[in-house]
Image (cartoon, helix red, strand yellow):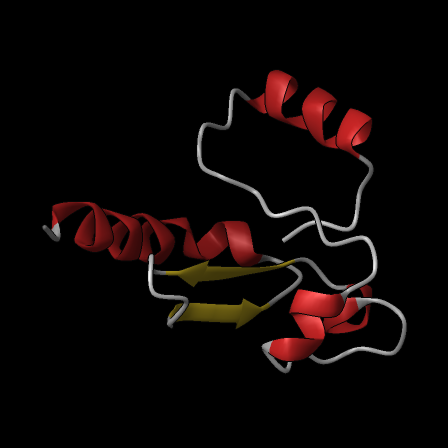
Length: 85
């Protein structure tokens, strides 16, 4: 989930070559629905990651300024989801 504008999101995706779907949530409606903390900004402005399956079930939620250090865990969860029929 990302509060950015579509234009900002497009630039980030192009710059990082990210291919996973990103939900644009400028009003934090979905972030609030999934009980992500923060006043005005989910996760109090910290960098974090939420991985949901196709049914909307959270499979990984991490609020962590250094979530990149946990990239292996994120990849592992995504690979598990991709392997499901």
